[in-house]
Image (tube, rainbow, N blue to C red; front, side, top):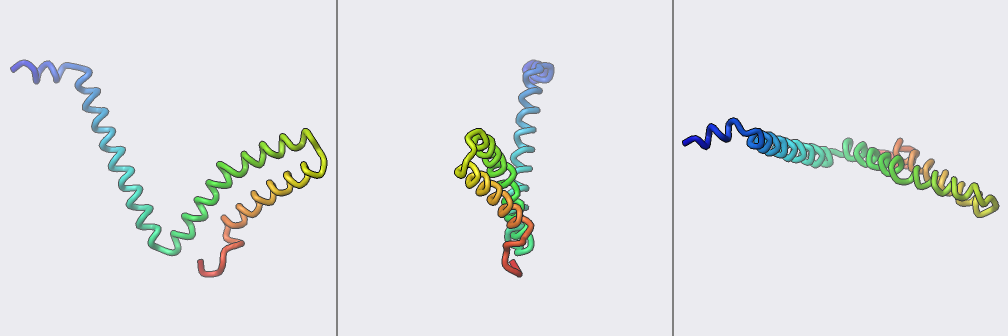
Length: 109
């Protein structure tokens, strides 16, 4: 019965133990996060806040860089189409930010 002692001394064994323990902790943390968010979505106050946070993420991650890219490409060409596209991109970012802070939401939501 030397194999338990061999495992105890083997570095690969402890790496495997640590990686499985870490994987278990990650699963538990993600499950807890999903439970927390789903619980918060049942409360109207938190629903509004979470939807605004989602809107902020959409504006920050998708719309703003896309607008920046369109504006930089359009500035090279100049003209009426460039002005219209630049205005639409800026208006989209502005409307997204206004929606996030609640200026466009109905009272009580």
